[in-house]
Amino acid sequence: MGSVSPLTFTVLRDTKPEDTTLPAFVVSTTRGFLPRQDPITKLPAEFDILESILSRMPLKTADGSPGLLQAGTLGETVLIELPDLTWAVNKYADNLPLQNALYRDYSFLASAYLLEPCHERYMKGEEYGLGRQTLPTMLSLPIARCAELAGFKPFMEYAGSYALFNYRLEDPKRGLEYDNLRLIRAFENGLDPKSSEAGFVLVHIDMVQNSGPLVEGVVLALDACAASDRGAFNDGMDKVATAMIKVNKVMETMWGKSKPSDYNSFRTFIFGITSQSMFPHGVVYEGVSEEPLSFRGESGANDSMIPLCDNLLQITMPDTPLTNILQDFRSYRPGNHREFLEYVKDRSLQVALKSYALQDASSSALYILAMNQVRDFRWRHWCFTREYILKKTSHPTATGGSPIVTWLPNQLQAVIQGMVDVYEANGKKLGEEVDAVMEQTIRQREMLSKEVEKYCKERNVGSN
Ligand code: HEM
Ligand SMILES: N[C@@H](CC(=O)c1ccccc1NC=O)C(=O)O
Image (cartoon, rainbow, N blue to C red; front, side, top):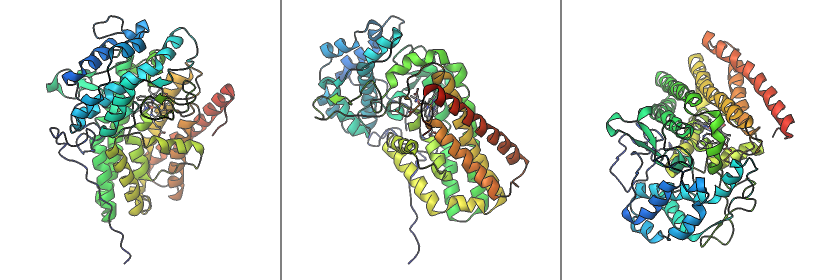
């Protein structure tokens, strides 16, 4: 009676790269949230026509010549050339990493097909207007099938498609070094590795390649807390903060690798359906559903590193409609990522990680320093949003469908508040390093409030 059985979750140490019966995405201490093996680049021969359309698709193709999106002929090309290849998708049903590659490729084509008219208007300096409202069977049927097999919704996602399953190594021997990374698929100029589209995606890969030690730190902190092992707990928390320092350092390279002035042209193709003016009634997936369907678009909100930290550290978000969007985003990710995040959330509560940390001054300081990395990430992120989006476009919703001015600050203010609460609960006596961090944090809180107020006024939007 009374004892609660410990929750368990298996994090891979060996990613079993040759095993095609496991999904492409399984969390590990070595590759963290990256796929178990580098993404498949070459589809089986049955899909040659899909490959052909995708390689002709980008505004600028691999050989530098203008592609179908530049000519505005992608839609008609799909309708004329692409047969329904669902039978071929089924033929490879047992190979899950291959299904993931098919899902990536069909989702690129589906997004380009749906948003091509918006891109044309954007290039003429007009509003996005409406996208195509129907996905025809040669796209809807195979994407529904491979998405089901690979464990995704039938619309482009951050991990399974656009970002984390969209890189290849130019020289396999050099591994995941930034300069050795190339995109597999692109909408605009992304096949040129120096382009802003390539830089935008590849910086995400470069960050997530540091998530293995983050996962390791989280597992260590949880297990040590359960065993009341203070030394090991502090090591785990330190590992978490150190991994996030590295992630944040790489994040800073975004400014140089992807220019704010280039962002909005390839961005058109990564919008979703949910809460977007381009798809006011959803999209009809012909032959899949009588009712129109709606999915959120591409977003880093579907990355798993920050939700992992939120769940471990028990960061409390306010009870607002904005927080509901955050919860909804958590369903747009590989199944195993989702299960791991749920496990960490439940286990952290079960072992009362936060109160365990606050029972000891050194653990409290480490807890604040880990939170500080989450704050640092979200603050830089707010700066990105200001420079790449708010200063460049008045479109009110982000690609994932969240309100552009207020959503990110909802979470950033919550982290800041969490830090202030822990600092004050410790009588502000956690050493000089923490004092300096808190001084900066409180200054930032004021700056953020003022900025958000200014943008809300300018754009005539409420604060939540
Ligand atoms: C130029 C760079 C970036 C811009 C302009 C940008 C923009 C945005 C926007 C507007 C959102 C709101 C969500 C939505 O789509 O509705 C968002 C969410 C998010 N993005 Fe980014 N992002 C950038 C880079 C990154 C990078 C490099 C990462 C790293 C993984 C990232 C991770 C996230 C996360 C975790 C969220 C959810 C925020 C939260 O939980 O508070 N973003 N991003
Ligand atoms: N929500 C962002 C885009 C975005 O979030 C994103 C999209 C694809 C891949 C990574 C992303 N990273 C950042 O959040 C936007 O509205 O532009």
